[in-house]
Image (tube, rainbow, N blue to C red; front, side):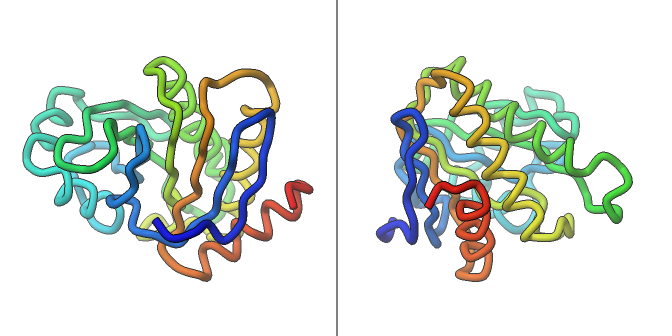
Length: 184
């Protein structure tokens, strides 16, 4: 991973913003922006499935899918991470279908799984901002705000959370969210 664009700290947990390929990160866990089937797709989901190999698809089949706003965990197989947390974000429908709450919920679910599995380093993509059409600036504020609130609330077992952005534009939204929360 390249040097982070920006780093902050909450209760001893470092938060980074980086432009990188999430499949290359050697974190304890990476989060997959998954669909409800958990059987692969495009964007981040497809890249993670390709990188992890066919064992990931087999493991995901055993999970029986996942509801929007929730998350499930598997091994990462051929990826440098140890685990993949599959978080299902909402499809953007204009903002009147609980999209904000569902997006925050999938971040909270991923954090809960990381705590249950002793994960110390975790990387999030910009969930729901690709084909699901969630406005990237709004999604970044929800992502950073939800993670910051969870870290401020008490021990999580984490030492590092990376917001892994696929482009400088996506990273800029996260930088702005850090500023809005007074993290920089």
